Image (spheres, rainbow, N blue to C red):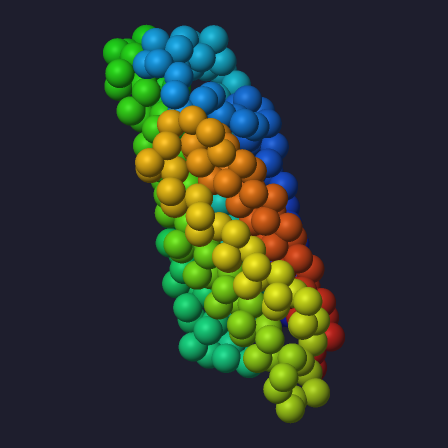
Length: 227
């Protein structure tokens, strides 16, 4: 029964990150409006796309359920090699969970009253993106802890070290790629703005690829390891 639960949680990670992508596309947030747009431009964008944004926010909140399942199965599998790194992955994953759900919650709040003051709408819009992209230390720590745990598992003498080493390196590299995005607080345009390459596109691709890879790895580990 536990093996089935672990496989289901691994699949939930893949489904969850896929639904997050669908949510961003639905809300027309791939990419989001430019950080240097005026308050009036941001408010007008919400008014013109209110139903899309609300639907995207709903899908985004639903997608976080898969994230929780993903963190749980990763902790179960990684603690066999390194309980400390597995716990660090789980704690950081819980913080990431909160950041993800807050992102879509704030987007929902911003779209709830699109006729409010443009300055308020702009502040909520900025807050949503800072919840997602300024909190990168949490997913970076999670990915690196998981990566190091997988590398420790591949070096272990136990015969059930079923995670491939490349998945460990993927986690470490993904974590490193997340961190430069924290500089978005200094920029409203260019590659460091929150819709730019470094805070948005690189972490989006690295994060999605890492979650899909680790979901696959956890499913593989759950199916191949002996009870």
